[in-house]
Length: 70
Image (cartoon, rainbow, N blue to C red; front, side, top):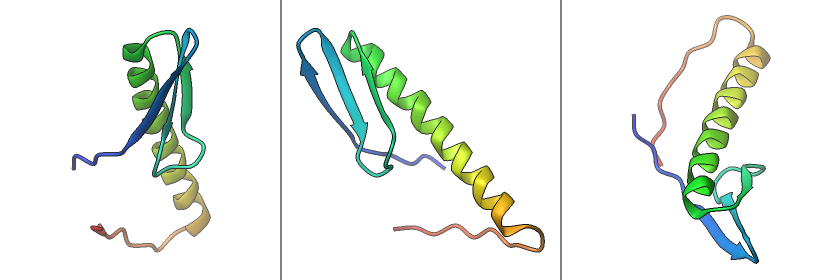
């Protein structure tokens, strides 16, 4: 499944700063636009995996996973 997210980015002095609009807490700061995009991509991937593991740990056993499209 290929899901897209929205990066909100701006340059502030010598730094590029970005946030992932749909996921609170995913934000990064880098020296170049290219580095920022890669950093956001990696941070988003880590956050999604962490949230997934956290949800599975919270539910315990006997659960069912279902895909939901928005």
